[in-house]
Image (tube, rainbow, N blue to C red):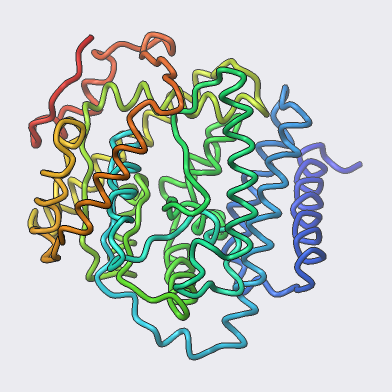
Length: 396
């Protein structure tokens, strides 16, 4: 008789293989490159297959996202094999925005995207990268137009339902690097759907070099027909910052800062919303504890890196200052980066701010006590961070 644990493991591998088969059939390809993606995907599937109470429809939705990621990876691997010269392109001096989640990184990346001298990773192309778009078609490619129509329809439906949208991305706007790293299955995007902390705990100590090398390949592919100096954003770059710098050694680092107590409450609210579809509205205490460990790593690890490489490698972008006077912060950032902020770009940034006021899609209230937490519970997590930086705490 086969032990139950062995049966469960065999079933997980059958599901993983089935997801790969679905992606391969859709792409008409079967080469995923290395197997670096397999361990992360296996942990994710195991969590969804073996945890009681997972909602079937929600789990299937997440599996569809896994297939989407594998599908794009298959096409990227194939394209790079057919265009080996792309591997020789350099990704030079990318500007990388990182920090705790919910610290204004989206606003910063959208403002930077108004500069035609920069090259943003756009929402639509991160998940549908082949063939790479040309510069002229970055925002008019049929794939972009189709996704824009899809997202516009979703936004209208959510607004009609009076459902607040705390984070929104336009199809032709900048997105997070997580939508590339997720194709190596080493990205905190996946953690936000999980019913247990197994994947998050693994991710904290995982070797993510393959994911960053994969991202470099994707950026090389995309810049092969639409070149530019990359402006990238993902809060959780902070968790594996040393690996990012090993792959992109001349990266210019923008560290976004906010009251960590408010950022934590907002992040917990976002993660609860992401998990609800597959796991229901309740939040497990073990998942909360794991999330707090992850959030602490967002400040502890860059603090260690800063001590090793020096503070001059970082621009410190404070959420409170960004909200009060965004253009002053942009001027300071450009001066630090050694770039020119032209009057035309400044005007474009101001137009974006006018079109995109804070809470444009409504307000989703959040508070620590919703998760059985108080600020005093978090003080040990953020003591070092708050002792190093003068962070304006938000009250009321």
